[in-house]
Length: 291
Image (cartoon, rainbow, N blue to C red; front, side):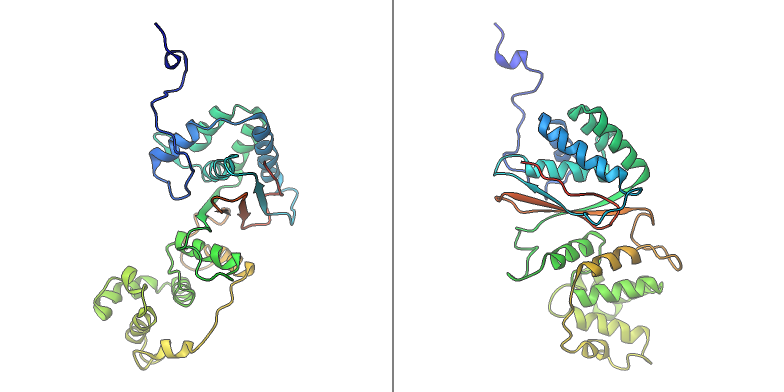
């Protein structure tokens, strides 16, 4: 006697996550999220509209670069935004590209054509984070630009402290960051990845700069003292500067995959009615809403 499970193509015993989490990024989880995704006709329409806007953006620039995904709890906002991020970054998952898995699930010819064009002509680096997590938000009044900036710094493996990150970026541009990092163990008796965290991070960085260039930094605390009570202001322009500086025309290669790469940040607000996709380039996308 056949059961319902026998006549269905999907494995009913397979565990399905009830709530999509941004930090579930291991290869098997991502593969499962894409291959288990079921897109309605309305969702397919939104993907077609959004991917079409992205594919056509280089030839038709627009200032409408943000995407607000709106819908009630459980309506699929997280899956929509995460899958968009997956297919734009297009990692290999268990031997197959994310975009190929997605196209098989969505089965929309036009959306697939747009996606193929984007993956070939507009390689994209995706920064995915959850603004509702306590680790992402430091102050209640914090601006979204600050949260996105720290997520971008972390993604590029810079320090999340603004002053330390600025120092790393400057040293990297001068070709001196490797020397700086290597000296951390000798000067501070700890690896730089650890030294740049915690209350003493400015002192640790300052001591290394003193060792590297004592004529400019005559004391171990010279650089730290020079910062004073500086209050760094982060704006959208700051994000674009970090992006453009990640692959300079001259000097050593930096952390952006290539100068043609476009950056897209997706921020999630779990348990609410909205998700925000924020492309960090004016050549990416127009606005779209899904409910």
